[in-house]
Length: 172
Image (tube, rainbow, N blue to C red; front, side):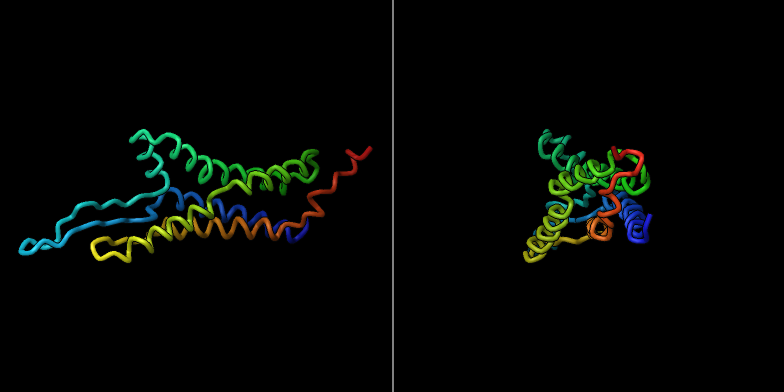
């Protein structure tokens, strides 16, 4: 394996290390309150969510389609993509190496992880501009963002010429 693919392999491992806390740690807190004269602030809503707790909450409130889509595109696809790329880079003599990489290229286009990060950030910006609504971004957001960026970087670093060539034992 050449140096570029070793770096890509390390980046994939680092991206997976960022994905787990990005999914399980809180990403966003939204607080809605009203200022009532003589009583002070009255809390109407306060929720801190992680991706996983958000998915669970959606299932609890029978938003199964939305919960399933977030689960697939923010959890399953990123993990599947990383595992397949790890296998592609680790097993040089694997006969289906090129096809597996092409599969990752196809599912990578459907990964909504980066869109999810932008959506959370926009929700933060939109809610923090209101006087009675405050929003805070937590560590999970930064881990998830790091996963997205490092994952993209790992694919950019890969040496595709090495991946696409077949081992000599399979050439006919």
